[in-house]
Image 1 (cartoon, helix red, strand yellow):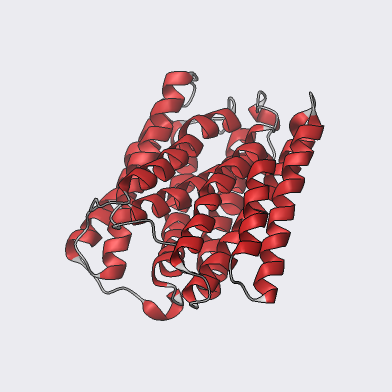
Image 2: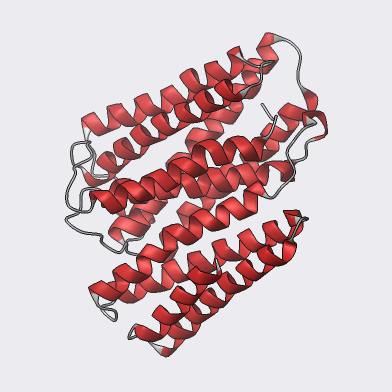
Length: 322
């Protein structure tokens, strides 16, 4: 984290930025440096320090991301500099989400779980999904392309969808794990509720992220251009997440183990992959697909970082939570 902070700070002074943007990027680099220092200072009791460190790293990376993309979109930063700055962001997001989520105690007693216990998993879900979308968006470019930025789409749509996934869905899951409702029907309704919230939150968050990072536009005004194949894929992916992944979770309600956790998270990765491709197709009006071009090696690294957050990191953050 400290090394990444140094790179972010140096790039903030190398890039031809406005004074306000330079101050913001320098502050983001300072936040990353403080995050690394806190983590190192945590020693053998890393939970509080790790949570604070991860939060600072995520915040710093997000601010750096927003400022860099805004400046590049406005023509103030050359392509090569913007790409160099962009490369630091996925690294910072992976480090921040990992530190935030994995330095929390494992949920060894689900019956005493509280809503806040599910925040780490929600953060991993949101950051991993957004990184997956960024990687899929980059894989078809001839070379890495710094994303665009629109604050209305980010705050009004992406952040709203993220809150549904982290807070609202977390509240439902905490109640579900605390009460452990008896009876197949009540268990089915609980799983159905969490998976429907997952689909709704994903739809809003991904719509906002695609408008923000790909179009640099206000998602409340762009709407959907429409594509029948994309719509079919989008709907099928949503049903897959609700019925297939939800059905798997329900069928193994009282089971625990490494294999179950791996399958559960891989089902999410497969479903959200198709979900992103389908929704992107409906927004753009183009046929669904994942074209591959010269930027694919770097894009694959971003995708692998996303999968790390969505599979092993989420499994560790959940502990024994169902």
